[in-house]
Image 1 (cartoon, rainbow, N blue to C red):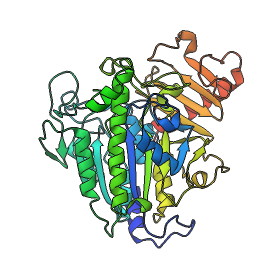
Image 2: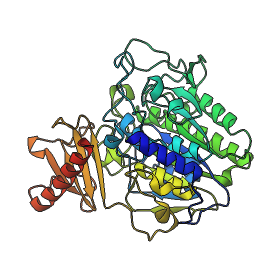
Image 3: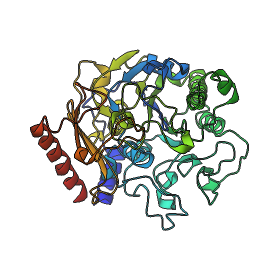
Length: 460
């Protein structure tokens, strides 16, 4: 059935006449650069309020576009968050429930994004775009689940969740695995900083303007551990304490790389016709490999692996100089699952209304601060859906319910009585008190929303 739907979709994208429901924002097909950072907290940009951190290049992108304040990752951990963003579906609907294990653990290749799922790359490739993924994949290791089989014409980066940026070996416990690929070929560039290599490959892919527009998903593996910021930035932040010093140096190193690509697009005359999207995949890590922290979630509790706001509320920006409002803020609720329908809408992709996504187009919100959010309700879940201990949340307006909550930072402590943890984000954005006993009707309402949604997922 899914293969049949995909056939209809892709055939429609090729053969259908111009859809005239909405006027395009640009006279020609825009280039698209989607930047996805890794393990970066909500506040960790200058434009989001960080006072001890330099991010001038990302701040520049925000100044020429829209910055969101209530934007959500689809999951608080890498693989499901990425699967959701590139398919426009909740990760459960995309078939990815948790992190994809490396091949020495998952020797049969059962993990990963199912091959039948339709990705951003497939949608834009069928619309005539040249497509590339530069950076981290972490959505499967078997041939049919690798980027070249998921719509990307070109891939340069690592297949697994994290690497050392100089040796390009999988950064985990043994066995040691080298993990650097160009398309499906393993390549060896020992000693070269992976961040610089990514910039080189993006410049090569966009070396000169072409008739066919480009779609690039740049999945930067920063500030994910190992913290390996450039020495100049480690020296700049030397007066800060560990781990903030190491984390900040890696963030500013990342910002510098983004600035190089931005300058390249400007120099080659492509910037004004390029949509740039920026977001991170979820909140910062407090794992041992990350020095037990470094990130700053601002007013929010929680971090990576948590459904608290610090785990899922993220910085998100969209910019297209001269084509969308500049230096504006949007407070409407939105999510990473919205980028696929939004970009298809802005780029005026033919037959875009047939995209089968959970996400909604944000085009009207982007163009007008007074437009309502397309979402009243959002869902999150990771782990085995048939296991009662999986982690989940649902938000309906200002109300949010967390199932089996956890806080890896240790700031909030939960008991058995908090298995259903009700909060009102307008009343308390820190989520520090369980309101379940005070608002039993609201508790029932949100529980019903979650379980009805879950039943629809598990029976499909």
